[in-house]
Amino acid sequence: MPFSVCVKDRMMYSHTFTFDDGVPFTTGCTAVVTATFEGAALGPYDILIDILVAQRLLREVMELYDHKNLDALQ
Image 1: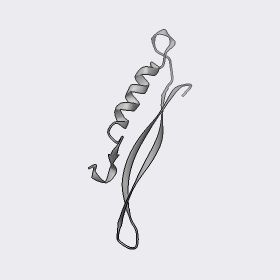
Image 2: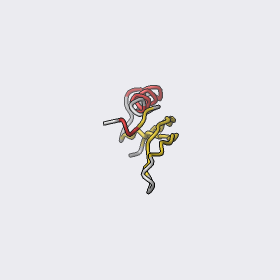
Image 3: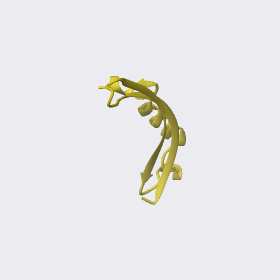
Image 4: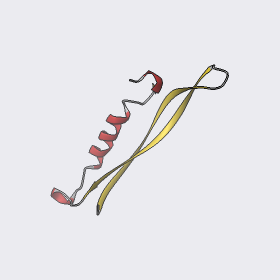
């Protein structure tokens, strides 16, 4: 695609590992997520997507996981 807009955000989450001793170990992680919006052509006013809209869309998706324990999500 000839046109693209990238936005980046961070989120924190936790998840649990179980090693050979069988004792669960919960750890936290920080993820840096980049979303790229692509298009073959620009829209009105020669804009692919408003950067604020792109940031909001990424944040809406990341809120599903931010500060959550991934083991508890179904």
